[in-house]
Image 1 (cartoon, rainbow, N blue to C red):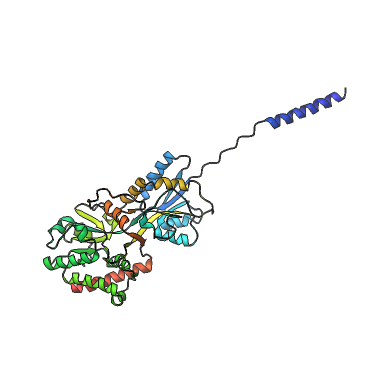
Image 2: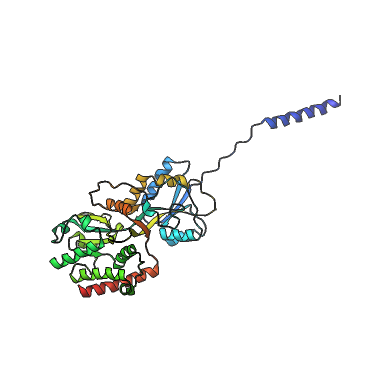
Amino acid sequence: MRLMPRLICILLVLALLLCACSAPPPEETERPVQPVAIWLWEELPFCAALRALAAEYNDTQPERPVSLRVFSTEEALGTAMNDARPDLLLCSGDRAAALYEQGKLLSASPELTLSPAFSSYGGGVGRSFFPLGAEVPLLAVNAEGYLASPVAGGTEASALSSAESLLSLAAAHGSSTDQPFFAVDSWADFFEALLPQGGEPFLAQQEQLRNSPKAAALYNALAEAAYAHGLYIGAQDPLPLVQDGSVIAVLLASRRLVGAETGLSIYPAPRLTEGEAILPAQVWGLAVINFSGEPIEGVDAFLSWLYQPERASALALEEGLLPAVSMPVGDEDAPTLDNALLRTGESFLLRPAESGSDWAFRSEDFDAALRTALALLN
């Protein structure tokens, strides 16, 4: 009889073990979804638009959200990166290229097709840096002033499509009217846009105008137009002068034309008749930051969504930038800012614009010296 209590205990232990084995496994707690972190600072293009687009994306893709962190300055963003890292950084092409060379960017594989205009830009473009838009030089023309000029011939687009033709018209207009035809924001930018088309880098040095046959030829065409009073050489902002008809045409950066299109016909920058179709461009886009060395979940999905052609092109055009995705020109006869940007994307390859403090100093010095020289001829 003493065995009965022991037997009962053994049976109870076995029953408990069987229950434990047959019990359902504990439910796994789902890991919280980590949003894709996007960092930028307020002075950059696309800042306001990306706020709205991030909210739109999160409404439609709640399982793979993004978070936007906007800093007041680039310096504040740099300080924050001492303690944390974004997944995507909105920055210039110059900064992305430096990060790429340092191995600080990670490759991504979103579903998108960049415009052929960006195919030679370099710096990890299309792999770890995804441009949103590019600022390019454009030609703005006072349409009424051009038609009233005694030397106007043919359509504006054809007559002003080459640098040689543009400067020849400026000289003829100045001789006939004693009024300027052509102006620029910066003569250094004018040479930077054109000289590399002839296969020669622009150095922003006065000696190049004497020692380089191609630079000298371009300068001589300017000098002839200045001597005929066909160039505006003054220090005043040339855009209002073109708007009121005091000057007929101006070459300037595309973002300057946002909201200033009334009364103006806008065209791609003129190019050398015998030269390569390339233009300097300042690019902004999203760089994929290499924080962990592993692919970042959600980055490809967000970039694929953002770079759908209509969304990406509208985003760039609103900022006065050439879109990074190909879009057909709308009304091909309309000389609008949007069409000029889209035509530029069809006609030119983009290369990085010169930048940096040393370049800024040299280009300002070159511009001032050239203005002085042309003013003596004017």
